[in-house]
Amino acid sequence: MRPKIYRWSMTFLAMCTAFSLVLLSSASARADLSFEQSLTDWTIQNVEDSWPSTSHEHVAQIVTYRYSEGSKSLRGGSKVVGDYSPWYKRDLTETIFWTDYQDLRNLLAIKVDMTDIQRQTSHYSWGYGMEISLVLSDGVNQSRSLLWCRHEERYWLSGIEDNPYEFSFIGADGTTWYRYGTTLTPSRWGSTDFGGGPLANVNLAHAKLGLVFSCVSWHSSPQTLWVNALVDSIQLIRDVTPPAVAVSISGTAGNNGWYTSDVVVTLTATDGEKGVDRTEYGFDGINWSPYISPVKISSEGETTFYYRSFDKGGNLTSSEVLIKIDKTPPTISASSSPEANSVGWNNGSVTVHFEATDDISGLESLTPDVLISTEGINQTVSGVAVDKAGNSASITLSEINIDFTAPVVTINSPEQRDYLAQGSLTLDFSAIDELSGVLSLNAQLDGTEVVSGQEVELFGFGGRHSLIVSAVDLAGNLGSKIINFRVVVPAKIDIDPDTLNLKSNGGKVAVTAYIELPAGYIVDEIDIPNVRLDINGMIIKPQSSPICVGDHDGDGVTDLMTKFSRQEIIDALGGAVGNFKVVVAGEMKSGCVFSGEDILRAVIPGK
Ligand SMILES: [Ca+2]
Ligand SMILES: [Ca+2]
Ligand SMILES: [Ca+2]
Ligand SMILES: [Ca+2]
Image 1: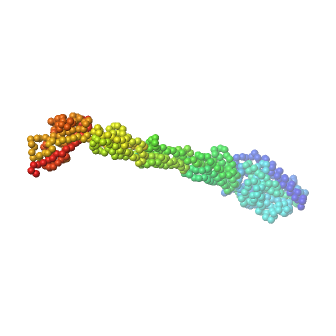
Image 2: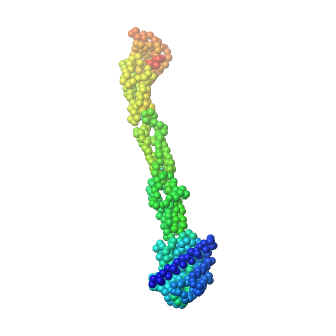
């Protein structure tokens, strides 16, 4: 057994050498053709390694070809006719169809469909093999995958004889490859070759594909062997779909697409083909950071979050999401107009005005002006500002004091009546204000300031007088009251005659009234036209003459004589008889008033 194994190793080394030469020689061949296009134009490479007496025959033939659902096929084959030689001599013949170099990084699978596989050996022994292989090469490394294999030696590759037409291959990354008609799933390519050779990694960015028909013979005896097949199609299945990236944004959602908290962005990239290679993010679309874990965004305002993901085929998904964060409530202020006075009161309606700003998302709403028209102390008004994100701020304006009711002034004394000019009068007045309270109270008697409780001497104070009391409350409202009163000088009145005969006038047409005034008053100053006689509810004016000043009753007090129509008095009595009070009053030129009374007896003789 040992010599046979040794010979096999020699074969493997020779094959590797042959492949290297092929790859180098065709490295500068056609370029810029897609793999599918190059399927129409394979390069044929023949390799022979034999004793001189051995003949080789390459049965390469591009009969037809097709890709996917095309209509053409490709036929290839190789044949060796072995001579008798020392048993350890070896013949190798290969026909290789090469494509051009391609970028195969997005390669998902290669699907090869072969039919009409034909092979022949003229002599069964341990010393031969036939195979059809698929090779990937980047010019340095190559990787070989068996599509079909036929060996008769049990110990060369264990298991082959048990299932010679279902050869499988484990790639360097653990991916299982299957025979023709089955989808192959590469990422890195390795090869065991005939002899279970080393796995090799191929740079898929610049690699070419080869289809190999091989025959190898050890000349234990003369033999002929050949293999060929019809390749109906070779289909490259590429990953041209970029990854799907799901973006999840977590945070406290506000309004209008704004968040009111920090935001965490989670990216989930998936690729159902070659898989995700890497995912990145950034904030300017230029500089990128690897995405490892969810990204926290704290800065307020509008932030554009860029993200992208590559799959292992180089396909790119790129997008961005606008993230708007506003964690700050608006600023709000309140003011009232008109302004309160220095002690904090308004005496009319007050308008409360609110102002607010929001630098980040902007203002959405603000409480409009509030008009307060009701009285009250320490009234409050609240306003609210809301930004577009839904953050809100409120403010309460308090101590709004409104009083538009004037104080109530009360004057108990004097009253609105006549007072005799004797004794004294005590002033009694006050003011109250139930809301803001009385700030000041002012009273003037005939223009002279007085205070409540003040005594006013009435003697010598005859005449018409006015007391004006005014009060101002803290809000500035003014209330006032006026009392007009008279101080009357007591006059001594003497009516002559004392008795009036209603049926006989005795030749007289007038009734005389003598008026005396107290000391200090001069009857000469009596304003005659303003003198009145009041009897039985009727007022009678004096006659303009005669008028006489003297001391008619001789009592040492000067008196004024005035006369009134006798008939007017009789008319006033209306036929009634008895004692009647006669009041005579008047004003002096100084404005001082006087008044006095006497009794007049009215009679009708015979009654
Ligand atoms: Ca993909
Ligand atoms: Ca805000
Ligand atoms: Ca008031
Ligand atoms: Ca007299």
